[in-house]
Image (cartoon, rainbow, N blue to C red; front, side):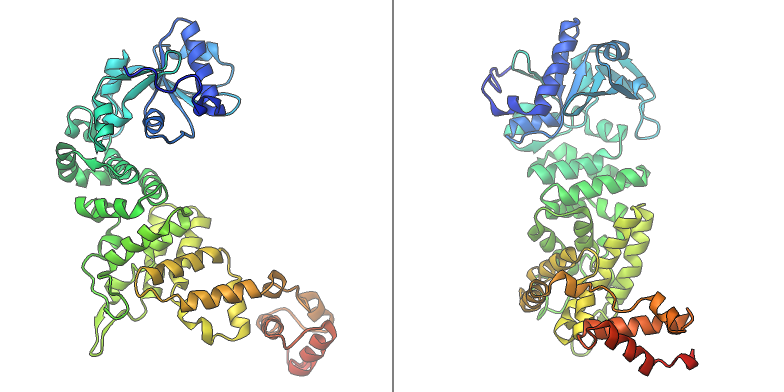
Length: 452
């Protein structure tokens, strides 16, 4: 169908990953097997987006694949799935198969090798069910994926209840693909998603976290959050975020509306972002619902940053984030209100604020927080100016005295020992102490040894 597609002079044919994929198909075909590119990479090529990797579906049994390629990782050989290592990329090579029974909502109970026509019926959405033969430059569509792609429509292959029942993660994948591609979810597929939304809780924590992270960083995160909200999947996977729904805010500071609307607007303004920044944006106000107070003068959320810090930490623990990502996300939630005090900070306090790990993400979140509400960037501009005007060595100057120096002067390690070092650093950042000799004299005068 629809040949030629790429054509001999198409720039993607020069891409090293495509060259690897073409070589895999060539070797399989030369050995007498049918081999086709399949899935998301074909969809992305049709949309004009160069894929980062390729998947190959083939009639070759696993042993034939292992015989033809010297470097193969049998990641799912029982299902006919293997990773072939090529010079520039790793390709998933899977034998055409049919699957039956999904008692656990994820893995098939029975697998048998089959044909392309049967293989595509087990896949999730029609736009992900297209085959492409790079040797003949031919697209193969058994499920109406080309029509759905043209209509910008996400539709499950066959019975949507059956497709979602086979793997409950597909409930979230439907949201991610629809948001990322800007597609409408076909009515029958949407109806099945709404009905089966509670099933998403059977998905493993790691798969949930990975899918949600992809939603946040692959584009149109605000649309993904909106679809999660509309489908009530949000209530199942992130109840802390769902609780932001209909929580009013003071209109003089938040003319955009409730807390969930504010969060969606921030995600819309965010653009490409690291996973930790994206999660920080999503969670920065989760402490507002439990701290909501209709005070006489206006709505208040006293201590919502502290409550949000506790909640974000618990959520990150539940979703099994890495230690690094958990600490970074929690810090973003904890620190997001400190910007309002930046102009009042002592020079030493401001420098400590500016030098905290990942401050670029803190600054980005603050900017989004402002743009997604009152729009006033005065504090953002002030902090940016201070950051640009302060050289790195002024933020993290080498210590004028060390613990070894204090021991040499007769001080013993302990709480007071730490207090001395903290005092010295405070005064060094403030510009009050600038030399080693002056600092040692300050220590002797301010912290007499005989009191330790």
